[in-house]
Length: 144
Image (tube, rainbow, N blue to C red; front, side, top):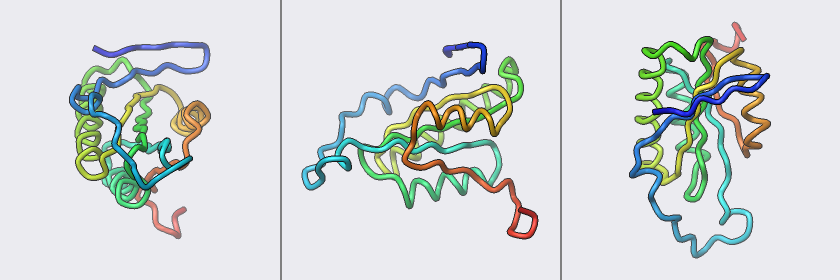
């Protein structure tokens, strides 16, 4: 069902997204050339909270364009929890479908285990995204 990869630093599971999203042909971009034509990588850190959904919606509306790849990352403390994995996989499938319907971008998803900040930074180093988008954990300007 999923690929589990471990190394000395961290452990992650690839999320299998719906097959019809991965088989879409690359869009024709007649007017765009060079760097824009290749597409960008955009990393969005997601969880089950409303601030995460707001950050995802913002990224889709303001950053994503055709030929981009949206990377969804969710970090957990224990990747062996099948209930949490199932809920997170369903969340990522819904977000991937929404991303394709709204912005025509392809999506890759990964569930990582470990410290949230360190795992997101490791993923950003691996992907080298054009942008990293995450929610505020519900904190306002004073609490931050």
